[in-house]
Image (tube, rainbow, N blue to C red; front, side, top):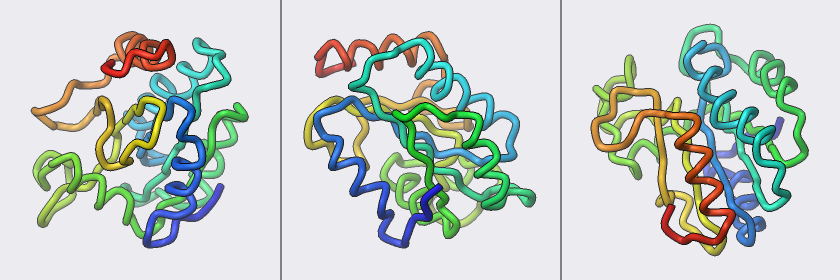
Length: 171
């Protein structure tokens, strides 16, 4: 479990290093049952169903609920030991805030987080191979109240990631 600094490193460094791969970023609370289910569907289940070595997942665990802490994040990360997965702790929620702004998530849509742009959490973002801008995913799904992006559908998410792996630029 690597801590993220205010400039979102080391996740951004790892994301750019892996530019030749299809990448998935998950921003989730480690104690929210809905988030953990989403992380299983778009994370652990995806890794199990798609053994392609050109797939990388970056789990950014973020404190949103009162019991969220580093120990809880480490415990849930330990259940996803695949070497294609990296785990980060966004203690200051900097990545979640910046991604919320980039995705146009309002405070009302981010459920229980108020003021300005909403916090991106319980979101699942996918990127084609190449020098992608982490703030502009090729597609993303969520389990929030967001109206301008699809809700997480495990089979649909997997199909779209598989299309990216096949080299289809637009998933």
